[in-house]
Amino acid sequence: MSQYSLLSKERTIASNHFNRWLVPPAALAIHLCIGMAYGFSVFWLPLSRAIGIKNPLACPKEMGLLEELFANNCDWKISSLTWIYTLFFVFLGSSAALFGKWLEHAGPRKAGVVSALCWCGGLVLSAYGVYIHQMWLMWLGSGVIGGIGLGLGYISPVSTLIKWFPDRRGMATGMAIMGFGGGAMVGAPMADYLMRMFATPSSVGVWQTFLCMAAVYFVFMMAGAFAYRVPPAGWVPAGWIPPVAKSKNAMISSRHVDLATAWKTPQFWLIWGVLCLNVSAGIGILGMASPLLQEIFAGKLLGVDLAFNDLSTEQKAQVATIAAGFTGLLSLFNIGGRFFWASCSDYLGRKATYFIFFVLGFALYAAIPSVGKAGHLALFVLSFCIILSMYGGGFATVPAYLADMFGSQMVGAIHGRLLTAWATAGVLGPLLITYIREYQIAHGVAKAQAYDVTMYILAGMLLLGFICNLLVKPVASDKFMSESELAAERQLVRTQESVSQIKVGSAQSAFSSSPVLLSLSWAGVGIPMLIGIWLTFQKAQVLFK
Image: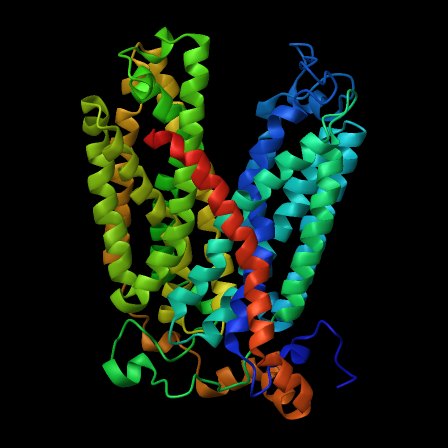
C-alpha cells in the first residue's frame, strides 16, 4: 500500500463493511462550503464603502473598469464587484468540463482536496486584495481560482454517489447538490455576524471575515474529501436488481459510454438544452426576486394602494424587508426542490420529471402576469416557490439522467462537460430579465407591468426545453464501450488492481460501519443546515404577517 499516495484513488477503495450512508455527508461538507458563492452578495455593500467606511468614497466618473481594478484611493462600484459572481459560474462550468475526466481517474479525494485549496486559497487572496484595496486580486482570488474550486468541488461527489446508490441515483445526487443550494443559507448569516464582529472605525471587517471563513471552510472541505470512499469494482447493494434486468427500461442503460463519444451524441446536446433552458428561466428570477415583488405589489404589501414610485422612503424600507423574506423563502424551495424532485425522479423517471418541470413551469410563468394584476399575493408567492423548487430540482436530477443514458463509468466527466450549460444560463437568464425590464421601463411601461413580457419569454423557453426533452431517445448501441474498452478504462483507473492490493484492517472496517461515526457525520452537516433553515424561515415570516 505504500506505493500509493494519501490522495490516490486506490487509498479510497472502501472495505466490505463500509456504510455507504457515510458518503452523502462527506459530499454535503464540501457543497455547503462552496455553495457560499450564492451568498457573496452579502459582501457587496460593505466592500462598496471599504475606504469611506460610513459612506462610499466615489471614484471619478471618467474612471473606466480597467482603471478601477487597480485603483486604491476610492471605493469600488457594486456593478464592478458583481463581476465576481459572473466569474464564479463561468469558471465553475469551464473547470468542470476541463477536469471532469481527470477526476474520474484521480478520484474524488484528490479532487476534493484541490477544490478546498482553490476555494479557500481564493478567499485568502481576496482578503489580501481587500486589505491593500486591489479589486483585480478579488477577481483573481475568488472569481477565477475560487471558481475553479467550485467546479471541482461541485462534480467531485457525483460519480461516486451514483456508484454507491445505483438504486437511488436521484436521491443520492439530490442530497449532495442540495448542499450547494444551502451554502448561502449557512454562510451568509455567518459572514454577516463576522463582519459586524470585526468592524472598526477604520475597517468594514470584510478581509478578516474572508480569512476566518477560509479557515472554517478548509477544515470542513478537507474532512469531506478524506471521508470520500469509492465502491469496489462490481459492487451493488445487497438484494438490488438492476432496472434494465427487471423492467427492460430502455431509458436506463446498464452499459457505458466514453466521454469522448458521449459529448458528440445528440442525447448529450438535447440534455444540455434541457438544463440550460430550465436554469435560464429560474436563475434570472432568483437574481431579481426582491425588486420583482416590490415593484409588482408595491404598496399592497403594506395594505395601501400605491405604486412603487409613490411610496415614502420609510415604506420602501418596509417593502424591502418583506421582499428579503420572499427571497429567503425562494431559497428554501430551491434547496428543498433539489432533494424532493431528484428523489421523485427515482420513481417517475428522469424524462417524466423534466416533463413536469416544463409543463408546470410553462403554466405558472404564463399565469403570473394575470396573478400579479389581480393582486393575489399568496398565489404569486406560491407560484414562484414551485418554480424555484423545479429550478433546484433540475440541477439535482440531471446527473442521474446522464447516468441513465450514458452509464455510470464516466458520468462525472460527462456531467462536468454538461455544466457549460449552467455557465451559459448564468449569463443568459439574468441578461434577459434585467435588460427586457429596463427596455420596458425606458419606453414608458409601468414598473408593475415591466415583467410581463419577460414572463411570457421565459414560458416560451420552457416550451423549447419541453421539445428538447421530448426528443431524448436511448443512446444507439454502437456508442457504448465494448467489454474490452471498458476493461481497459477500468484498468487505467486501476480499480481492479486496487481491490486486490489494498487490504483494510478489521478495526478500520468496524469503525467505518460504526453507528456513532454515521451519527456524528450527519450531525456535522445537518446542524448547520438546520440553523440556516431556521434563520431563513424567520426572515420569510414577514410575508405572512
